[in-house]
Length: 82
Image (tube, rainbow, N blue to C red; front, side, top):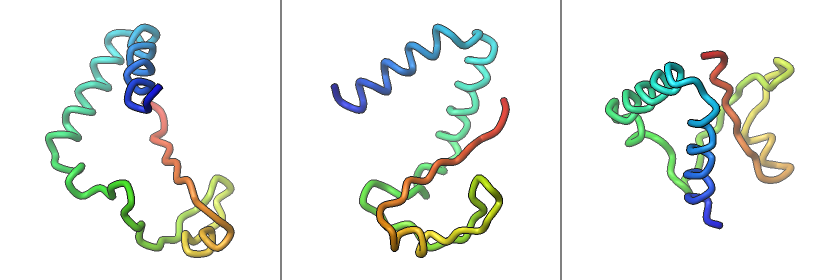
């Protein structure tokens, strides 16, 4: 199954379990982001990320450059509570 199909299935499953009022808030937020033009500034598949220093889950500053010395890096951003 393609990633796109998996994402569609995930969205459908999420919609069934998320209360409608919260789903509407999430959809408005996604639409607002799309209209803002932010996606035009995002990195695309194959782009090189700029080096940065950010705190990890333990609060320790880590550098992308240093992490890449040990292999590929996966970035995950936590939005916090709704």
